[in-house]
Image 1 (tube, chains in turn orange, purple):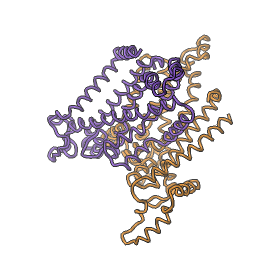
Image 2: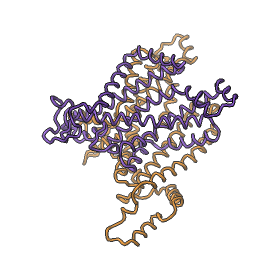
Image 3: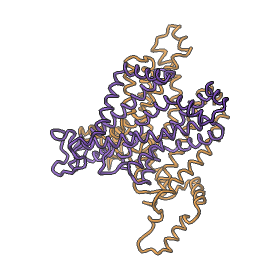
Image 4: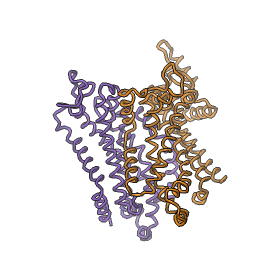
Length: 316
Length: 281
């Protein structure tokens, strides 16, 4: 077990290194001069050169990269070109909104996906299965931003049941208010996760039902319902943990569109604003942040899988 | 052998009402997009007197905030969306198959190098890269196609690599090798035909995801620009008028949904028909 963790960690380090290079290049080749946001009309050329020097932009690119990397490792992701606030601070400030939204969306998806996947897998090719399959088809084909607009139209504009944007009503500070604001974006995101989870749980239920322990339970005369929810569920549930690890990578990028539609003040909409305003340090920070989450999420998923299913050691 | 596979697909399609419906619907949408010029309406004709008209006589899908006919715009938008879907799929498949075959057939350090490269690209959230690149490059249909295909080839090359590694061990390939045929000839004559079904299946699914990516980008305002319509950019425009003119959002979204749904259904039918060893889901 420990060897698996060490090996995966060793694989992860170079990955993180290369990803940081890619992030750096992506922003380095971008059009536009980062100095421009500091330039005022009555500045001399010498002043502009001094700013360039202070930003380290007169050094060769590879030295700029190492300076940037060193700063990143000490927690300094640079400053926004637009509002001059520290990038990491802005990301951390927005993190609770995104993480809360994502966590509730994933929780909702898991709660719905488990019974759906189990029942569909146990009744393969019957009408329940076909219904669940149809829902999964619709889920993967539905443009989530369209769903978001339609839900917003119906629940907010037509029926006035829920607020259509933001996270809080100005002047109120109650949990209920935040829940009301978050309900629609949460449902939209949950549908995205749900389809993936249902397919996974369904196929793992099908393979579990072929296992010996299920046949033995049948031989003992246990009811199908009991076998399914007492024994199979346990085996199906553990791999779901690994799915959650993989969902970590979606934390930022997965919510960009949904957060934008509902003006949810999370990292996704921060990223959108940065892209619109060509705010490179913020774009670089968010890209690096979400890539690291994705890599760590996969690492976590692999390690958890190794703990849950020790057989994995021999095959990897 | 190849013939019997297509017989399988035909049989699978015949018993599947959903599949037949998907094929017919796709044909209708594609033909409507191709023959959009037969429509008497100009998709970019601005008419201040006809702003935000609900669907009805004269305007089947209503009109938008500039008084443009939404039906005509949906037809022409479908052209762009479908074209982006098809061309991105073709480029992505070409890159993915090439990389996958090289990696799987030659193995060794080439394989490790290519696969590590793949891992790195895949560990940056693709939608983020998509956004970044579409900001850097000038937004045009051509650039969007290139960007989307650059983000889609990875999954195909993984599948192709695995399949190539399996095919490489087959006896007829080993004989061909022993008889001194060149690597290129072996790949062309013996490996590629065996990969055909995997390629077709992932290509079909990739059209669906390319259309989805283009729509999301255009919806956020980074895709194809005004006045040219795509389904995604029509939704972008509709968002601001959702209270007055909700029908503006209904039709383009429905078209994206149905097109993507049909390609996904078709992809599954092809998979079951072409790769029976995977079994029915």
